[in-house]
Image (cartoon, rainbow, N blue to C red):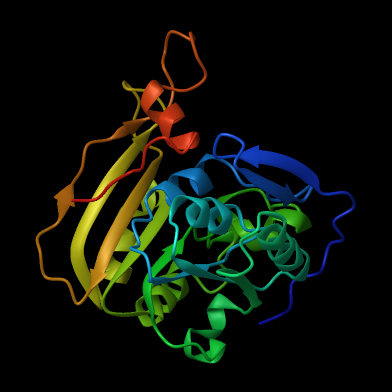
Length: 255
């Protein structure tokens, strides 16, 4: 597979997440963390002493916010883009988390075994949303790696399945219209699925889904109550439930 071009990060911006508790330096152009990263971090319920891997950690938004939420949990992020990796490593130090958050160079398409790591207790991922270049206008060079899964979504689900021990949890956020593909991919080694739809408005179709699976799990699939992001009346930017999640005052729990 051809290497992605390295695009210089001119002057990273500095943003505050989780009610100001997390400082995130991220590229001023290209892919930037948003709601998906915040929701994925809020869905991490790893217990103290656990080891968690994030496949495709970017500048570390999920790593930092999940680690701030989960004291005593160790996090490892895998990222192939050199500029994003450097930012993730710097963000761990900036937030005083370097003792239990690390970001390492690695390519998801190469498989988990290529990373030389032992299986984790849990895995998190926000895989690229597209794997067909014909499905959308070609993304900019800066966004290509975050938007396009060149080897397909199945390469990400396979990586996640190999990345966790038996009984380990896999949590993914993705487009709602790819739910069947996610279930099929993770279903090759995991079960006990739980799905939480994410709706932009209460009267609109879900645009995102949070999916949790347990490696070798056998429990029936559970469809959880949806999270609605925005009110229609425009009185506030987010619903109270979403605002509580973004500020770190509430999690997105699993059953």
